[in-house]
Image 1 (cartoon, rainbow, N blue to C red):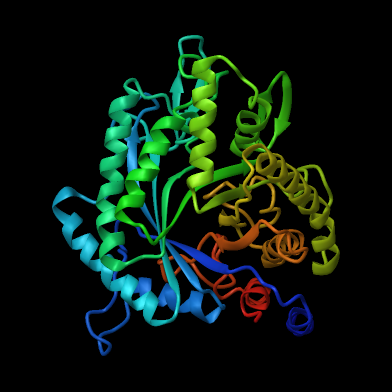
Image 2: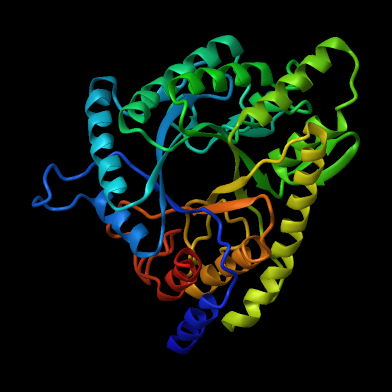
Length: 421
């Protein structure tokens, strides 16, 4: 193992010098551990500070604070922040302290409001039993609010809570939405009433946020998954990103006024964003494969798949750039692999059992970075791994979660890329 790490350190020093600008990690608070920083330098560090220290040690220059809300049911109209109303003022003060600490270490700060769909009795994940006897998994990417106008009002109020923090802390990046597939570009095979989503509302929201944070990098995060979507009669994988491509490129010549207006709103939303976030959770292998046991061979095997994904993304972004006559930088806002055997298959599985396997996690990380970082794609502007946990027990070689902390081989992969000049 140590020989592998030594060779990785040497290998990293000889790679290309023009590294992406963003090298970050995602942090998420929970009910018992909050985003906060010690009141004075002599006080014990908080779990959030310790997580930030790990990010800095691994070479990060950016930290994303994910703040959470819930939506009850797939047809709900309200976005409800998880922080109780009476504590939201204190939450913002705690977060400002943490942002100051992050900045004191020379790193920038991003804020990323996200939400989860819960059932009426708190079920998560929420499967609704339908009238035909089947069940439907509701998540933030396929929601169908009964009153879309009210939903957007509620969502803006959710953003307002953290826009207050973002302005006070002078944060460098704000995410206006993430993976809201049905609300941005539509899922017409599931929600026939609104087949094209609501791009005009997103354009209004982006301009609203821009007035409050004129100097921040404003982003929307698009998922890039194995999900297939029907685009003009053909099925293509790529999840939400493929649907954006279809809407912007394949429907560019629509002349019917209402459809033309939708296309213009969507393309203007794309063009007015400062960068596009990518939430990438694609399987790097098939479930029936037999995987090589050694690190190098496994990495090269997984890289066959990541090379294909990088080529697909390059083609997609080239088509969009030609359609809107503008290039956009892409930043991986969320990508990660659990440290379990075959954790590179269905990597979006956030929880569960599994036999700990650090080599499988590290191989997936390196394959992805070799395919997306090393070639110097003109659109690739950085990556943020999911996640460094605030929970002190979710680290180390016995942890089967996403964090690379305390996992020597995984740490070395990230260190090699993040610490490049």
